[in-house]
Length: 379
Image 1 (cartoon, helix red, strand yellow):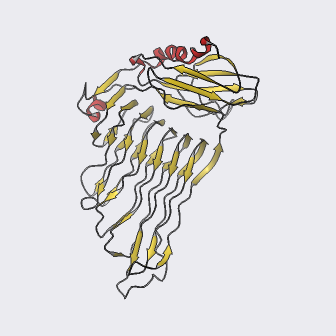
Image 2 (cartoon, rainbow, N blue to C red; image 1 turned 60 degrees about the vertical axis):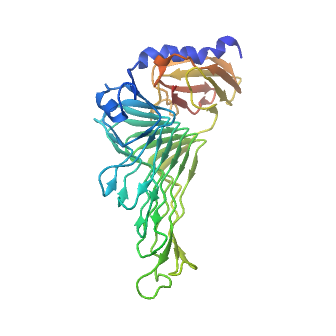
């Protein structure tokens, strides 16, 4: 690989910067907390959050939220329901990008009776989640009660793009020192009304608990299994995936009154509940998230002898007509004609004004487009 080719991706990112230049708001530098930053932010702004634990966030405008140090957003709010760590309440258009954050935290069963999904709501064209840990909030202090598991992502958005993330629905919970008659379901990993693109990530449903049966009539086993389903991995209209691990959660296990013998099990969830499943070849991979001033490597393995590398200012849904696997948004910058299979080691520019810049990369070969690689430049 020549030194000129090694500069292709950094130069392309610099060319894209004016197209995506946005105000960068610092938390806690400019505002004391993420919610006050969102209230003050113009559309398209980048909010940079430096670590910490934060109360639930409502996002009502297109923006990019970038975590530095994996900030944690917790469920909270007035009982009886713990609110989503992130709620989308959009104006009906635009994109929300969540990068380098974690959502979850424990829910106190002595205070709350239910918990909303870790990401809920809608009102946007797309939700992009990169390099994050998104889990349904687990129950703590369940005492003698049963609680359903919260979904990790459950949104009404046409496109949900998840890349380099771990997504898991919460386990259902039950008090250890009680017998039960009511089944509860575990949380799902990803639920969307539209298309989900899942790349280099895992999505898993939560598991059901062990419960001891007691109907007040002498114990034993239930005449009919009460159920209690495990969570689904991904539920959507269309799924596009590459290098993705998707699994279902186990159903609840019902024991006799003494908690010794297994009576029955609730149904396991389904890994996929999708109208259309589109596996993508894992023929373009990145070494990880693209961080300012840090080394980053693209590798590809497509038919040769050569491919053309393209970089764009972001990613979106593949068109129904034309190039059905092209996820790059225009304009496209041509990187170069490169040998295949091969790799391209680069150093991301250390320019802090690029913080929050989304980019997409695909390569074109004699057999068409590769899978996409995308991300948001982080500190």
